[in-house]
Structures are given as structure tokens and as C-alpha cells.
Image (cartoon, rainbow, N blue to C red; front, side, top):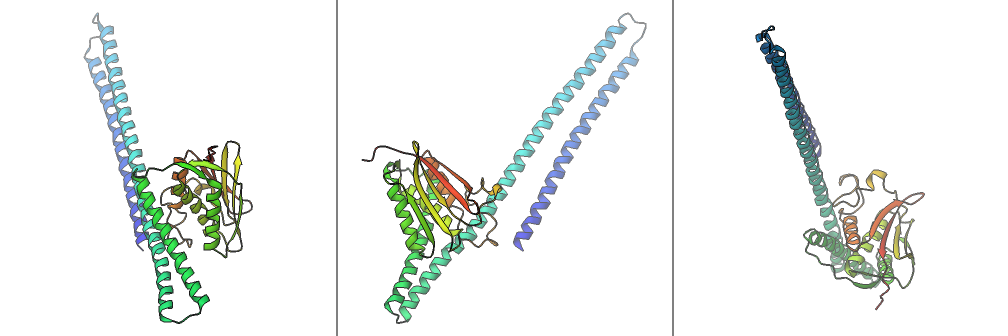
Length: 330
């Protein structure tokens, strides 16, 4: 209901805005035509006052016509300047307003998403602990509940890390500690972590050994984790998530493939935006806050690399990270 009200209010504001802009432009055109007509009438009146048999008649006629043309040119110049300023201002205001509305919507979606993301692991962990306290369970059941609680705690920790890191990066408060990193080992650790965390998910890895890059291990680990988790999130249990790391000339490419529904063409340019998620929080059923891909893009860009997304035929998508290789493995 609130969403419908906001859409109606936005529609009313948009209509009122364009109506007011149309009125201003129409008024400007009206006054321009009025001034031109007034100038023409004044010239005609001055011509009637002249005596045709006067020796300087033709000179005065030329002067009157010249003055009329000068005024018309002045009106055209001033009118065009005002028109240009009005249009530029209108476009600026319209874009700024739409940007603010989109940001407000994304922030609202983020608050809804973060609420769900925080409540779910807390509720599951609480339920598991209460079950352990109230019931006498077998060792295997206890281990399963403790594993579930630990998994949800890790999820909560990853979520907090994403939020805090996003805030620090935006504030320019985080200085990467770049060093030589064994990227092969880092990717293998990430893949192993998610195999343990999601035992039901098919995860295949093809990692070329001995690939080193210069960067911040914490940030690069977060970027890789975000891509793998994102692939798992949008894949069905029986579908395979593929993680591949290999050299490509003087660079290294990390590919994370999923076999989910994929990403529409118009969405591909938007998914790296802060808080952006396809659809809205009331209709989408996948977990997330819209920060993962934003942070990944930011991290890879800060490491002088690039990240792209492409279709995975016949279904799903492929995220590709490219980074520069370093020969210094010391």
C-alpha cells in the first residue's frame, strides 16, 4: 500500500514538474513574440513619421530597419540564452530528483534486505542453541546443530564485514595493505570454505598453481568469496558452480560460473551499483543486500584490475576477474 502511494505521488510530482516547465517555456516564447511584434510596430510608426520627400529619407529608413533588426537579434540571443539555461536547469533538476528517488528506493530495499539477513542467522542460531539446552540429543544431532549455528554465525560475520568495509571504503578510511599474495592458494581456500559451508552444492574448481599477484589479501579474499557465494545463491542444488583460475598472458583470470537464471542484458550494467538488486525486496526470494558485487568491483578496480559479466550458455552467467601477475613470489 505504501509502495503504491509513493508511486502515485511520484507520478503526480512528475506531471506537475513537466506542466510547470511547459508553462515557463510557453511564457518565454509568448514574450519573445510580443517583443518582436512590438519592435515591428515601433519601426512602422517611425517610418510613418518620416517625410518621403526629405533628402535623407532613405538613410533614416535604413537606420530604422537596422535598429529593428538589431533589437530582434538581441531578443533572439537573450531568448535563446534563457531557453538554454531553463532546459539545462530542468534536465539537471530532473536527473538529480530521479537519482535521489532511486537512491531512496535502493536504501529502503537495503534496509528491508539487511533486516531479513540479520534476523535469519540470529533466529536459526538461537533455535539451535535452545534445542541443545532443552533436549538431550545424540552426538551426531548435536554436531549437526552446532555446525548449523557456526554456519549462520559465519554468514552473519561475512555480512557485517561487507557493511563495515563498504562504509570505510566510501569514507576513504580504508588503506589497502598490498603485498605479494599466492592467489592460487587464496582461491583454493575460498572454494574449500564454501564446499564445507554448502555441502549440498556442486562446486568444481580448476586452479592453476603458483599464480602470484600484489594486493590486499583480506580484500581479494572478500572479492572471491562474494563471487562464489553469489553463484551459489542463484544456482539450484543440482547445478554446478565452477571456479577457474588460470594465466592469460601477463594477467590472470578468475572465472566463476553458475547455471542459474542468468542476468538480463539491461541489468548487467547496474548490478555493480551500490545497494542494487534486480527486482524489489517484496518479490525476490534470494538473500543479499546489494553490497557484494559493489564491493567486488571496488576492490578489483583498486587493484588495477577489471571485472565483467557475461552469459553462460545455455543458462547462468560468468563473472570474470582480470588482475596483473607479479613474478615476485618472495
